Length: 614
Image 1 (tube, helix red, strand yellow):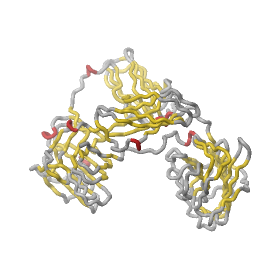
Image 2 (cartoon, rainbow, N blue to C red):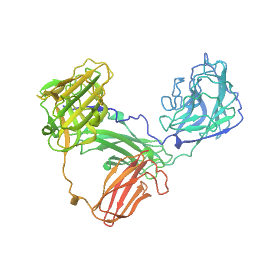
Image 3 (cartoon, helix red, strand yellow):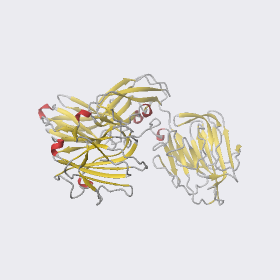
Image 4 (cartoon, rainbow, N blue to C red):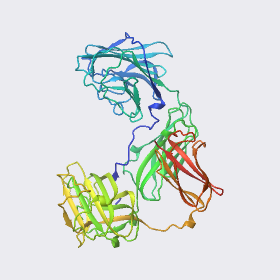
């Protein structure tokens, strides 16, 4: 039976296109100007508290964050909603998530019971403006000693202004937001203003605790940036294939569906959609022509020939792209090893609630495997247990391993501090028999010794379930178990009271045997490693040279332009590590995207792909 285990902690699902952030559309400025009230169309609600209007025609196409809006909704709580897609008057005023798109001159729980809410379209094309005015708004709704006046102005060219008039009284225990966000919100996709002299603005830190008067005459301005000619974005369509979690089988092809969208103003005819696993190219497709705002779905087919954690990167490669950082989508998955390749320890002729006891909220288990049971030295990259599952289980599992000279646990636990952590993640085990595979986050170097393995689990739901694992009993007392609902046992300070026995789970170790590498098989000059890749701050490039020679190591962007020269000179024989800090030759931080590292000698030229993700 095929086994399915879903690991959640390593994959962040996205429901919208990754984009370059709100900074590609707007810049922030501030000034002072006389506050001039308007005489517009009145909005009226039963008590002018916690209401949002129906859609209101702006009077012109309003460009905002790459989209065009014809109407808005206006809330009594100090924000407007371009596109009129939101039905909640919510005072839950956090710009980084939840409600979007939002334009918020003073987003809080306001009341206009003694005031008014008006709107008007003013001027002639192409210089029309849409005004919304809040007059004598009570801040907060229950503070009868503080009344504020402010306006928001939308201009036909995309410019946004927040204008502030007189405040009567002082705010008390308020928690307002001031700013704007994009149609998909999130970090980098909002501007959050903190009032002051001068005011500050952030795209990463959302300030929703404003409790101070904004001086009359203050104007906050969001100036639109010129339109982008060439800009593709790529989105991995997780909902189209996310049925078996992030598990795939060794040597079996699977599609990774991605949507590529043209966010620029020019038609794009020549680009490639490429899938990489590390530095290895798995699939390359020629892109079809995309007019502005058009998109197309591609299936990038992956076939991976080694098991374990794999980081896949999908890229829409367009040399002219002005914002290549939104061309990239990442997918972390686990490639199941061939079940026949595991080193099996144990007969599995019993059913026991080890190494995980799902009947209890917490369980801690430890056992020792003998060297002769595992065999040769090598790198252990994963471990499996065999569960007879009848329910769906959502568990937090942590695993530690380590060498030991002990043959039993008569003296108690080997604490986690004396072992190496190799797994820490949430898992979902479906209701069927499973080989539950745990790929190690860091492969463990095994040196043909007795091996101690500690397994911790926790879950928060109540489920009277006794689903067991395949197991066996050995004569030696080399297993310890503790289970409880009362407290969370600490693997680094294990409990005194426990069960000592010889019950061990049937286990599969996935191990790569040690094979000496013969230096004569290495080429004269080779890039043998780039890590971490993708990288945020620095990447280490590992070279191997079999002789002393002249070497040049350079970085190029996808347009073929040289970005940085990392090394140019005489290099000694052997391994050389060279670090790139993501800066170009002018000491400027490079943009996110795909880069090429070229190693050149007299006899050869070798290239490796690098991905910058900051």
